[in-house]
Length: 259
Image (cartoon, rainbow, N blue to C red; front, side):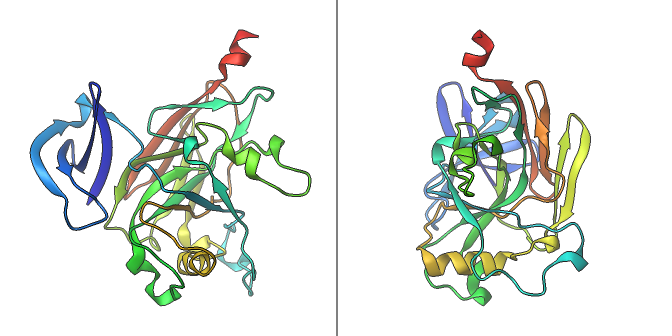
């Protein structure tokens, strides 16, 4: 089932996408109390939003190898995680704004996990019971703002730096998909999730031992090899075939345009 959020006119709706139509729903998608309203929209008549307003966003860094034989024999005892602000979230077709003072940022196409119920101290074997679904994320990054001691927060946190969408897919095998990216129509990333260093079950289980995950939390699972710098006018398509394609364009900030 593909859940989405969208606007038509000045109203915001939640719905279930099926081919070229969206059936509106009411209620909490994380519970069992949502229902169809009977109203149906054509995809061509609406504007898709990020499919979720996250509770929080957690990313994992440097989590892919280029080939299976490069995976380490021992996993890191403390994985590299970081937070991104919810103010950085945008949806499909929205512009990614390059911050004042720089001309290039990096795209990073990723599989994003959406947590569906409260999770604390969850063993790896039970992790998927706490996952509501999956969407496509773009962990846009400005490494020029990374602290010299390795702090990533500023470089990950600018407004528009976390595009999500186009839907949350609840019926997905996350271990049998490829994470792709096309820049101006040219393929730059295409890796199976089996190339992750910290696998999904280990990743989520570890986080639940540190913090309580809540419904609506989004976990960015890392980006494949191939991410690169882009500038104003470039167009990025982040894709997981079973979920959909997340398209965005890069533009200069208003301050840079004025100057």
